Length: 210
Image (cartoon, rainbow, N blue to C red; front, side, top):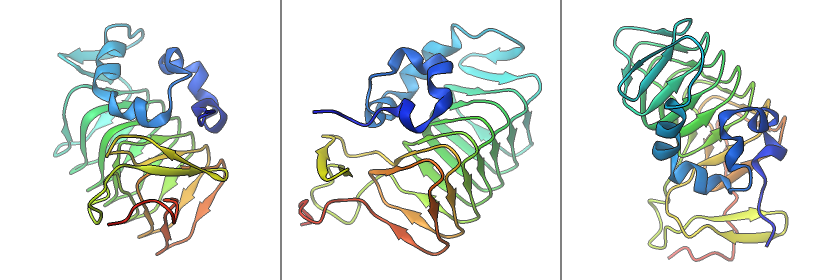
């Protein structure tokens, strides 16, 4: 079965240290985020301050009160605001912003993307210039179901991921409105817009919900 190619959604993927994983589906990438980020830290070049498995570029800003747990790479000119929370294996490219009260877990984030404030993004891959307005969420777990296996609709076909935690593959320049919720297992095309206060759920209607 042909699976979604991350490089089709994110132009910078093939130029990044993650290009070695070009053929892996996005839910496999996020499942192994900690291991992949740890490996990338050992191969970093450039002006990074590295303490254990926390690598912060010298042009990046981490405000007092932010919580940054290893392993993590914070790239050039990124901003992590006070009360932001990073955990579970994080890679941030260039010029990214994690706003106040935002949480990013087991995710990869590319150039110029922003979590405004009070967001949660779990087990996801965000392309370049993605913008999440205040309060919007990319959920990563089907708490409401007894069968929590993530099933994705791609084209006209359901894909069984056989994992229970995956948020979204978010293409370049996607915009998510304030207080919108993206349900687990989403694939968003480049330039897609998710309206404010909406629910975006791609789980196939035929998938088990009991």
